[in-house]
Length: 87
Image 1 (tube, rainbow, N blue to C red):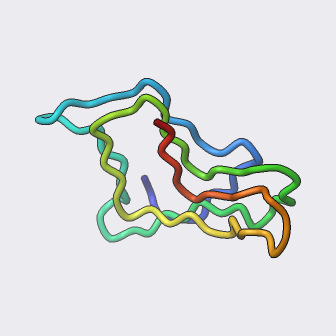
Image 2 (image 1 turned 90 degrees about the vertical axis):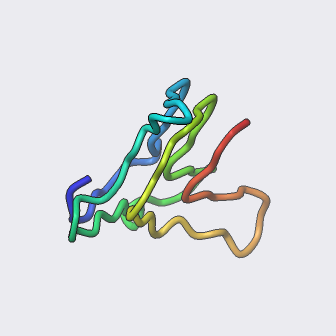
Image 3 (image 1 turned 30 degrees about the vertical axis):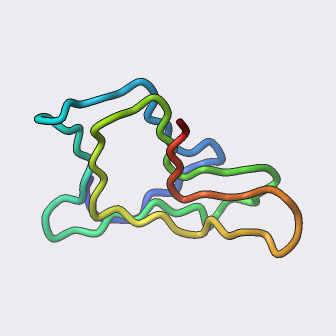
């Protein structure tokens, strides 16, 4: 992933039913020397938001990616997640 700031919408990114193997991981990482940032600073949270969600995914390696501006509300019961693995 190239460096810079990526402004995503309210849906986030989902890796579903994507799997590598023990000897061949799926790798999502920063380009050498660059810093990618996934920013939700422009989103008004009215429901749950997950920056990167993984469901039915195995042998995934994430490295050097920053997810920001997904803040937990001070009150209420809606949890927010930068990364979430759903089993």
